[in-house]
Length: 364
Image (cartoon, rainbow, N blue to C red):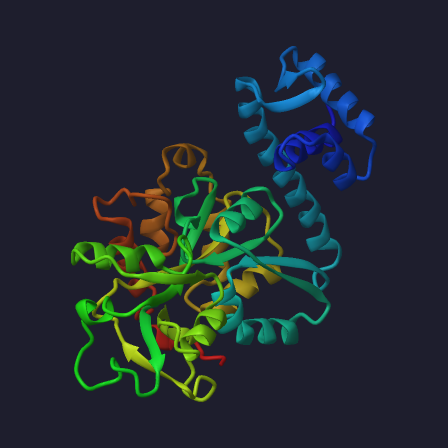
């Protein structure tokens, strides 16, 4: 058994069992890929893939369990490599951040600028993707740090830290019927076509939940992942926008008006995530601390490197770790009898944060 065989197994799943694509991505031949798979199966004494003739159709039960182990082994291998790099050259290397457009465009620019000043020789790679893609990159060792609002807190292999809290706002063209004194209501909002985020992005679940609780069905005529796209179509008069309030700039969005809707929709908490047990370079912890001084390297490193094999299987973070540091949050329940969101908010406040979006430096 060797690492190349494990890479081929992982890539075969990622490439939807297309061996031609697997061979191209790993710069080898299709016959070589097939041989590596057959050799590994012979060594293990089990078939890892369901076959129809020479085609691979999916994973067998042993194959499904094998893939989970393969992901961990390859991620740990990358950690070993980073360990060597840390001690051979502390000021050089690569840092991969996986995040969404909202965070990359409106929250992280000032962090990235400060990081580049502190570590000019570190190659910073910023990958934009969906929450699911971000979770996959972290779990597979392809990204060092993930930043987004959805999904990450529910992945057992990841440990998350609350970054900041933010609310949705309603944007309309100036002079719109909703641009008037007085608090906005869901009933008034639902009378107009809605333009907002795609499902699974930027707190869309909280938007849908609020309308559902009120017994209303909004007419969502357009959805997108990119806030700039949403604002552009609102400016054209195609609908009323529901966006992250942090993404609005009175100067840049001069043709639009932001209406407070924090009383209509539940607040959202963006988190910073890393793979449990992964070895992060010193500059990775510095990046996290630049995001929030309430997340110092010592506490974050202790949480990331803690022995959490038992808690990962149950979907709960280590209770002692949370109590001692007041920082880490795991998927689902926190083990304190409180809902995860409520406990996270309390832990975050105890670390000195007010859970206010205004604490995040505006970059627009």
